[in-house]
Image (cartoon, rainbow, N blue to C red):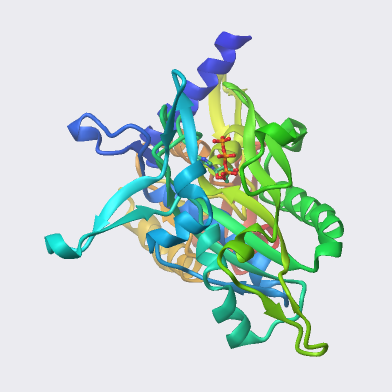
Length: 403
Ligand code: ATP
């Protein structure tokens, strides 16, 4: 069992490299542990994950304010929050602070120590007052941010799971103290909904209540959503009740405009790692079956998340009339409409299907000689391998209905 599961990680890592999703960072110089570079299809996957998250948690709501704060912050931020003292991991009995330290400023006498942020959360807390002053939100309301974070992990490992540079999608949801329990439950539900919506295998998700002694220094209650990775059941996302810890430390408060009361709101924090989301999606989507006596591998991504929605192919690439038709009548209008459309005329049709299966493209559209006379194309379904003929005038609607 273990062998088979380890095998699965190897297959995913190799597919990601071969098909242009994810490459080891700085590879031609021997790499840099804990870093990865995202290729064309990986960027598309990551963008779809982030867009779906932003749509659900920001665009579709009335109580959420987006922010894109600087990665470099005044080191006083990290002193105030206890990160300088507490953001540590231990190895052989020694404690190591895992914030990535850097220097800001060129002239010696002006150099200041700074840290590359280890969480996006503080970018929101330090802009709490700016947001309240600019938008006058009523409690409860939230702030949301997607961005890079850095942690000097002692032992980066397991592909995207533990890196030194990665991305987070976080919400800080501000409520009155007495309401924290209600919103903790509410956000738990929202997180589960989103996981299901993007296509994470929910049978592999487990909730873990983190005991007092293991919680981060700022949290009074934390639930981890764990995922069954091939290397073990480990954290995918987290939900924390940060109390009024951060606002209090930054000496920030909130004035209820109607009552005039000054209070320190309490915070519920749903946090999502983009990279772990991508890994869980790759693992959830990876399938193998047998087609024509051969094993084929495919990524069963939902069309909304797949890097490519459809590939367009002329049956033969040396027939100018097919190529011209496929290009002008099919590829160009689909590309203009959906963006995530690619042209694939490399190798024979069987090879193209295998390639698109591995990329996770839900539909392959083939233009053949019948197309020239009856204005229909073949649309092949990734999961079943079944093909149907669709009128060109109905193609856009056919695809629109699936995404
Ligand atoms: P772990 O216990 O695995 O170190 P954590 O509890 O420190 O994780 P958080 O501080 O809650 O993680 O970070 C929020 C999210 O960021 C996590 O739920 C995870 O998705 C992601 N994350 C954390 N550390 C890493 C890492 N080194 N590489 C990739 N993603 C990470």
